[in-house]
Amino acid sequence: MYLVTVLRNLLIILAVSSDSQLHTPMCFFLSNLSWADIAFTSAMVPEMIVDMQSHSRVISYVGFLTQMSSFVLFTCIEDMLLTLMAYDRFVVICQPLHYPVIMNPHFGVFFVLVSFFLSLLDSQLHSWIVLRFTLFKNVEISNFVCEPSQLLNLACSDSVINSIFIYLDSTMFGFLSISEILLSYSNIVPSILRMSSSDGKSKAFSTCASNLAVFCLFYGTGIGMYLTSAVSPPPRSGVVASVMYTVVTPMLNPLIYCLRNSDIQSALWRLRSRTVESHDLFHPFSCVGKKGQPH
Image: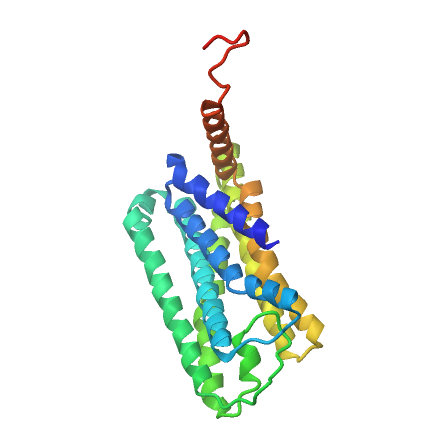
């Protein structure tokens, strides 16, 4: 599953970067989402594979902080990228005349950089909160990943400050993002239904359906993981919920975009055709005819 996740996301990145027809803000956000998916799952899965081979489930304190910081960083990046992608669809469908001005390439790069720095700040704040904790040794966490909410339940320090921080953080990166995405799609759907062209309506629905599917998958599994952690489930339930969030979601994201987005499909076919042509060009017998004569 890890190899499939990395290869699928790399294919999308390669297709977007190599095809000039995909040099749009939406595809730019999509390629950054693929990078975030690769980094997100790479922060967790290799450690799990090593643990499986060594039959050990122990992680050092430094390793815990590193994994937790990476988890928070790339989760927030994905959260903000999905919000930007929903806003991009809103502008292109509901305000098409303003799209070249609002979503020009410079603004796209700026939005991505702002997303990264805000996510990095949030990651460092989580690390600072954790460093203030007084913890017992040999603590067992019933989760697949070193996730902050699991650690908060074990903290021996004042829980009021921790709770305030978690509520503010959840509001900023959770509630506001979900509200913005739902608000965007509540305006997008009526605009699509008012389109007179059936082809345009079909293409708009296809693109928005892939974005909405990824949005539901990301937030659905994420909310499921946090709810599972909140009710103190058996260890197996917590692990299954976190595996769905950290492994299955990044693996399915590129598949959803490839199936629902005709532009991505066409770019992948063109990439495949160029790869086959390059292979034939450099093949040792590619310049030899049927009777052994050069073409």
